[in-house]
Length: 268
Image (cartoon, rainbow, N blue to C red; front, side, top):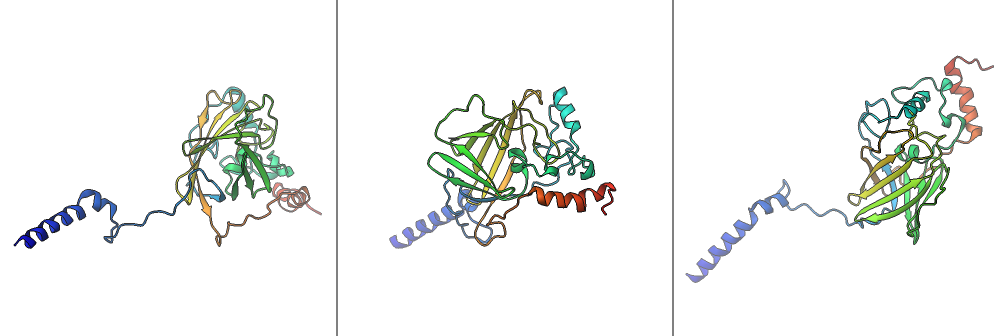
């Protein structure tokens, strides 16, 4: 009799545990507990990353946000003077004024928002970011140095980084205002200060948000929509970065054969 009582108590404990709300929530639809995700170090951003599609953006101002930008009068004038070949305000490239049309580098902001792979490499005193687009490298100093009083102008800025919990916070200044903040012509001045917040969500996914502070162009600091990136592992098409360089010799050929004819220019 005693054995039957013990067996009954054991069965009741098992059923109470197995069918408790916590246990049910932890079990998959097939009745098995889903395996834990692959391990990762949230303070290690190493690897090749590619931006995931964020859906359509109907905002006619910037690829960085769907919200209207808080332009100052000077910012609005600068924005309206841009004549892009892409985006909602796109016109014929031949009559545009995109700096990329003369084989200039895209610069930091435009590169970060453009969907081409990049790689993070950690070292003792800095994090290096390698971009496929134009084969450019960028140094983010992590040795506790302060931002220089005169950091630019530089095409990719001067950057210092630190960790806040599991978020890698990067401060960038000294960006060259002759370049654009995205392919649609977002303007910025030499006063622009950018805060990047990189956070590894799990082994395969990472998120970036920017906060941009530029009192010449914008009435207040504003924050971008989150951008998501996917880790490119060995065997994936974008796991090895290509050499994507717009050399003047190639850009001149493109202008002659494609951009200029689109404006009605006759090639003899």
